[in-house]
Image (cartoon, rainbow, N blue to C red):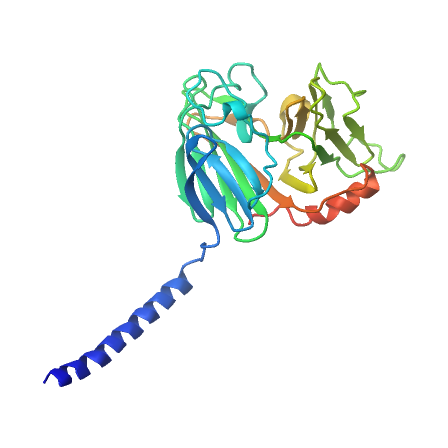
Length: 343
């Protein structure tokens, strides 16, 4: 009797096993596979509540104790191309705004009070299939609420970063979303002008080149070619420098130790942009260099959100022999063909 019972159980078990395997296969085929992008909670340089996003090739670290900030973006285990202020890492709760480093979102045009509102409180973290959303509490001073969403490609070195600012106040506001990336010292920023032409065939103006009161075009850190604007970060030169411009195809790259960080966004020439029409700005001093993109000025009603998207990528072995049109074309034309679409 016992043997007969075992004989009956074996085919039933086999049948159940086949059904379970069939069901698992059906679920795996019906559900998108996002396993290539992983998110884990981690400590980073004194902050206990950071989040690391990786696809096995690149990694990004977002702070949870302050922000929203992306404090690191790098090849897996490689150099962080973003600036870090070591004396400000791991801290929170300060009354005044802290530079800290990394990547952040601000409102433009710049205001010494409202733009510099502190982001020193913990943020809400929402894990998504391809990354995370980091959302700050409503700022008491401005009644704005900022968030950054990361969508990492399942393979390769690309990531889409979406910046959102919501008006949580009682009155309409007009502003632009401003995405600022602080780069590590010692590199060179490169940005392209709109397509060039020839006189007298192309007589119309193509774009503004905007100066600040402290801008000095004689500064040796600037280099201009027909197609490109470049700015070198010099740790030995503390004089601040800044320029802005408009380009419908706004992009900027930063070269450091043979690697390149590149970000790109689209700008609409039919819309109004801050700072005399800038969709791109760059700033440097002796501590860091910033590459910044800006969205259009927008009337934001209470409860409404303005959104600004950048496409990011990292590249290895980007080594132009000089900062000339020919060398920069050779270095960046192939890279730009791969950046600018969602992962």
